[in-house]
Image (cartoon, rainbow, N blue to C red; front, side, top):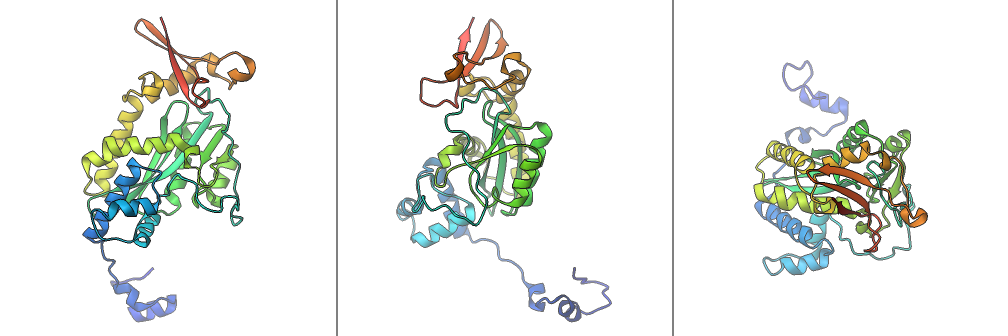
Length: 317
């Protein structure tokens, strides 16, 4: 927009024509201070370990280490995109300034891949700055379909992740929280154009998106905290390698120690998993078979733990 070298017009004339303040041309943004970085790192660690802690409890923990007030903690948490999973005040008064879709997963037995996908955003720390990570997760197989990193919470990186995921497959239901990214017209239009049912968590109910929340804890403890990235490039390289490992190699306890990609691909190839069947209505549990040496793993919905969205592995010789 502004031509600084070999320009026919002076900088003063260019800024006047564009309606800009000339002093803004010489502004150099200051990097975050070491103190701010340390506070954000500690908030991230406390929140990852105790996601039900709000600003009050996090402030109490931090005051054992440094001098800080609750307003500062609230400001940092807003910048990091962190919200406690506990219910907040006035939950009966729904905000009317954006379109909100109902939560479609209550009481639903998720019995196949691409039945329910979840999307969420989390904070990724660097030594001298921070990034934001968005990921799309298949709830049945825990397979990460797409992810993106960005230095700001602007909309494009979320749109990119959604578009990339939709090139892999199309889910029946796409679940998210009620954050500004997921109630934006760009996001809603993308999913509606694709013919996807949109589901949104209730306000103050982050547990409605629990599988994606659990993914963040795994990523941070197994990758981010261990490597302490120096730069965005190093973070991108590390997360690329980790998500490849997570999808293709990492044994997942909820999947009978199979990798998510193995379950995602095998379940799609299994004829018995081509349609969603609720075993509590039909009495016939849908199954997904994964053959290994000497055994076959059969996945059926778990009706014994009060959570019908979990796949419970049963081994059959």
